Length: 253
Ligand code: 13P
Image (cartoon, rainbow, N blue to C red; front, side):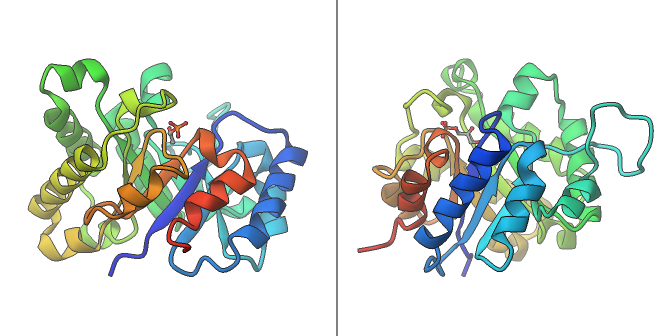
């Protein structure tokens, strides 16, 4: 059985005080969510404060990015994976489409970041997904396969155990236009197939694949009902504790 993961990506939102307040508001609302891992990803500056206040709770903290370099040194502006761990994070989002689009992140950088995260004992949440133009051109599968081949290059089966993949179609991010559960399932099954070819069937069956792109309390249950959807990476709807808690508690009656 794959344990679902519901992760909130706060992107570049919230000062420290608001980050802590949201995390503290979330804590009791998801305290009984034993069916899944609950993760929030605040901005770098708020990670330590949020992680300290969540100690002993069932909510884990993620960074939104990390440096590709593992060795500390002259890399102005970068934050090493083990520094995130030092601040209290246990996950890190890597290769988000906003980083690929606006900060020229390549598959080989994503690959180095994944390796850095694993070396720091963080769980990387590796994001893949096609743009609308790529989907319309019939290239969705080819694009996603390229991102997986490049992003997971030279990883071992035991590395794969430490990884989560998030399929986030770019056309569904922040647009209110979610992939239908069937569209998402189709791509998730495809991702699992590629991973099986690379790492073997058994490892691929253990891999958690999250869906991201306009996930809301109204559509989470339909997505989670799909056999290859193992959780969600939530942007806008994770910024408010009550709304995010409804997504986490998608199975509540
Ligand atoms: P939205 O949920 O706001 O569409 O964002 C999705 C996302 O990019 C999560 O990483």
